[in-house]
Length: 293
Image (tube, rainbow, N blue to C red):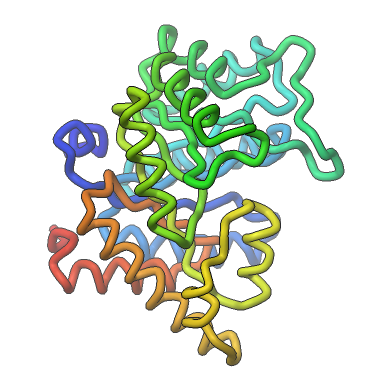
């Protein structure tokens, strides 16, 4: 059964996210991670896309390899940053020709050194524009992003939800959240989105914490709230201690989300497998995920 079929049947999906590394050592670590997560029978693996298309070919090659060698559906991220409409059409054609069936359609963050997003003169300003291009012209399953605590550039949460509704109306099949550490934020967003007419599956993005410095970076990069209960739970200690507690906290998040009918779990790996596979194995052992076939 495909991840799309499971979503249509309201069965929670399991997926992981990786990114194309910058050097040979990084690729070695990624291949070890892919080997580990492939044994956990994910519904799909998504691959990110560098700012301005800086990893375009690597993203396409990596998604193709995941599908060909691991026989796991791949979902390729695609952003509007730095691309004209014609270039985006060409990339979509290349992805389709490579047999890639899913994309994550994103506006994308400004390139490093730029504070605000500036669209290509002949490109798109919003992910909804990219979705509107892809939906009628290609056969992809289309994912998009949402922010349980509001996109930093949105004036209000309701405005952000209205934009998610637009992405749905343009043809998005599902949405994956930015990382969050407070499940109540997800529940509030889901309830208000439902009232606003959002009916696509809202998959929860979970990032296990592995160090206190990493946690601060998450907050700076994503704007995610760091709840007091997480800070208290992590306490102090070396990275090994914090990693173990981060896994435990991430597991508790996933259990509660699954108990509350989450559409799916999307585990951000940072190209390292231990934390996310530990969470997956615990969930399976507790009966929250089916036994691997």
